[in-house]
Image (cartoon, rainbow, N blue to C red; front, side, top):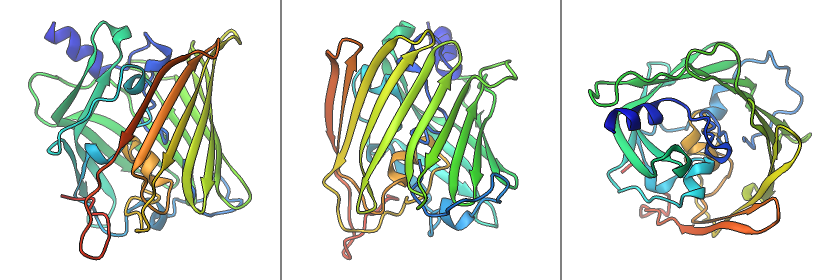
Length: 297
């Protein structure tokens, strides 16, 4: 059982449409910084995608990964100690994330969430893209990740495309394209999922903060699968230390806003507009004496 469970977590599951993990996005698995009409060949504006202070750790209790199966099976709450550890090179580039919080959809035959300390990501940079690869940093149980890299393509400050692959397949499986308005504000993302369908997300902002994401999923044959509504509110007035930090799927939602949301809800409906899942979550962020969110603990 452990071996089967290990393989399901390491390899991307194709068993459930809502169970698809948008690895680099989800990047739900979305940047609102302001370049206008940059060419796709524009080099990455590193000042926009790296935090101003090199954050060493982030608790999984303070972030949300935009992953469907995490919500269709319920929100699992990590422990405070379940934190990703971040490493940087001499130029300030994020090169390593250590510690993964993984959720399994019930469609896989298993349901639950796991924090694996010695699994993580490595990041490699080129002119206008970042390749994120899963890696085992010494865990004997989970073995070697069987997942090909995900490529994040940038145009200046903006994330414009994420392409993910499945083990042993060298053609794109999931491709997400992001659309911005003339002010550089994220408007829409469209994810084409191989042999599954298309997920479209519409983003709404108020005063520089993400307030709502409306989603629609259409099967590959054109039939409706369902819709989703995600709400973000109860923002503080402190600057967001993760603003623009879109390199990891876990920081994606946080990276979109100038301040820090403390309440989140999601409602999912099927093709008949019946609510199949609804949940609300509060984030208890820690602040220093100056009123700033202490993201590294």
